[in-house]
Image (cartoon, rainbow, N blue to C red; front, side, top):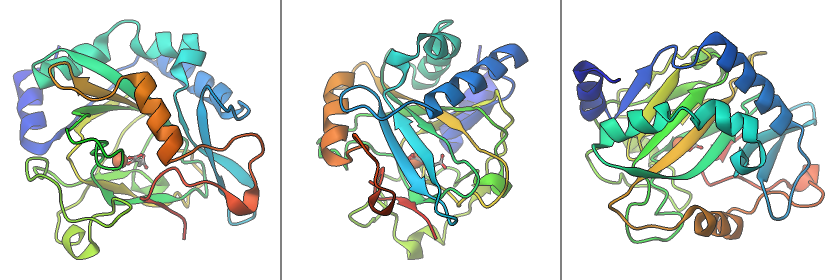
Length: 259
Ligand SMILES: O=C(O)CCC(=O)C(=O)O
Ligand SMILES: [Fe+2]
C-alpha cells in the first residue's frame, strides 16, 4: 500500500502524510462519532477525559483517552479494515501492538502543546522505549491557523533532546530547529515516529482541529500492555473524575499550556 517514496520519506524525516486515507462517508462518520465522545460524562474506571477553561470561562473538552473500547462503531470505522496497522507495520518492518489511543479536541479557544517528543516511556518511568509510531487521523482540516502541528524533519534519530521535568524541549534548543507546518485535510492520516519533535499553538480560530492518535509498539519490544498503561496514566496524569472543578482542572501532561 505504501510506495517506496513514502517509506523513504518516513525513514528520512520521521513522519509521513497519507492523503485521503478515509473516504468522505467514513470521514464524516468518524466526525459524528467523535462528537458523541465529546458529550460523554466523566468515568472513574473506563474512558479518561480532560477539560479546559476558555478565556470566557466555559468548560470545554480538551482530550480523551481509552475511548475505543466503549465506542464500537468508531473503533470499527478507524481500525476494522486493518489499513492503519498495515501502514505502520510496513514502515516499522515489523508486527505491532496497539498500545493506546487519544483524542485531541482542539476546539476554538483551546491551548497548545510545547515542543516535545512523545517518548511515552520517559513520563511513565519505563526503562525501554515503548512507543515507536503514532498514527494521527485528521478529523477536521488542520493547519497553523487552527492550532495544527509543526514538526522538524530528520531529528528522530538523535535520541532525546534536553527537556524539563514536564517533557518540554529546552527553548534554546527548540528554536534552532527548522519547523514545518503540517497541513492536513479531514480524512488524512499522518504517521510519526515517537522521537520526532513537534508542537502545536493554541487554537485562536473559530474552527475545531480534532485529531485521533493511535499509538503502536513494535511487537519485538517489551513495555506495558494497554491495561497496564491505562493504570499508569491514571496514576501519573489523572483524568477528571466525578465533577470537574472549572477553577482546578487537571492537566493532561506537562507540555500542555494556555496563554
Ligand atoms: O495535537 C496536538 O495539538 C498536540 C498533541 C500532542 O502532541 C500530544 O498529545 O502528544
Ligand atoms: Fe505529542
